[in-house]
Length: 341
Image (cartoon, rainbow, N blue to C red; front, side):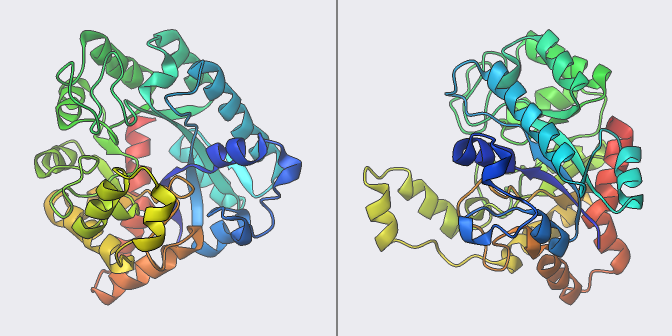
């Protein structure tokens, strides 16, 4: 079954591991032994037919606009290099790529710091093919509060609302993953587009600030939006969340990890979040956003991009119909893309 995935950090890995040198990493060959979670053979094995490649740069990187442009350039270079990939900026582009047997490749910028408080930069990213902007990353920015920082502006400043309006005008998706609940609500108060989360899970099951609260899931339903459930272990279970919180307190992280392995987490835990979003928001409003190559460890059975069929099989065991599985895998994402891009 064709999968549209909302978020993959391969481009950042190619920067830090290989300086974007394509000769140092052939993605046409299985890269499992290298630690990468993504390559073309495993994308095919996983049924991934469309991928939003994250063009993310760390908030501590000097000159984030330049670094973001370099990453956009790297994704374009990948698409040129591999016949398996085809650039897509609309739902129609995705479907045309599928007709040619190619993996549709879209881009999303994962953090408002990457536009450096400039609507002009945002417009240029759109011209280069970027089709969503995550309003924040792990820290606040001058015009928006992050889910994982102390609130400062109470959601969005007036400029933050201008960013949302400009995203709507450009027909770019307003990505609410990583933002504080107050920012979610502020953005939805302004946005004319469906609510969209590229890689988040349900706060009703795991009380991590990166997850989507129930009241926001109601707004996802009411705006015909989409939550693309992510596979990050500490967003899935309270045990993994507590483990990650404790790890972050350590001075000797490597030593602590040797004595404290990640609590068990697997395909069933991801399926629980998928079902929770379905229960609260509806089956038309859930998708998949694995966050591959954005975290070092993943649930058992979902260790790399080849794992999606295992999740679909788990949901089949839970009596999901093939029509509902198709909606989860790609149909809901295509609908939101048609409405937003």
